[in-house]
Length: 267
Image (cartoon, rainbow, N blue to C red; front, side, top):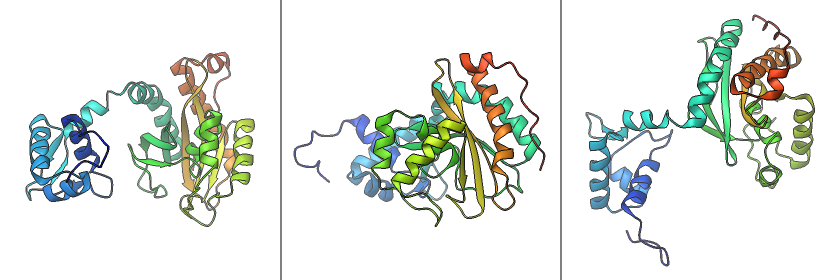
């Protein structure tokens, strides 16, 4: 396989990244030929790159000969400053919220035009969700995504509103005019509600987490069964937990709010 016309040859580092990018949540384990095909590299080149990545620990080989992402790569990823500091600050509040509700508690950040989930706690009886730690999702459908989009720079909002806005369920907001109104409501009330926009049995309430400069650094959400859910009642504990994380991150506004957070409701 040759390089596309007009493009410089890929460096060894670039080829290694192509190999790693071949693995996805839908294809977490690949054969050598599968990696070659998905990375767009010759089989001989793929073999050399895969061998070096495996020697270093970025890839591991299963007994059947297929490859998957190695633990060494996960160890490096866990050192990313934004994720590590945020998770350490957020976990106490997330654990408190989880113990009070035994529902899905999720923490996410924005990366470009997508949501990246950096932590999640869930009980066995909690409503099933499609998200996973390290997974990505569109900004316009989830509760955390609506929060992150509402407080994103204007150019990011306009890029998302320009579409396409993919539909996950019949209730997913795909009208940019309506989505713009929803984002304004999120900024006004300081929390977002996503009602059956991702799956038809889940409702999410999310609140912004602010950093040392008071800019929104992340979003915290509680995802519950949609039937019988009361978003307004869920908003209070979510906002309180998000303020607690914001205080831990050094948000001046959150630190000035000295009132004790309300006790989350039990379910």
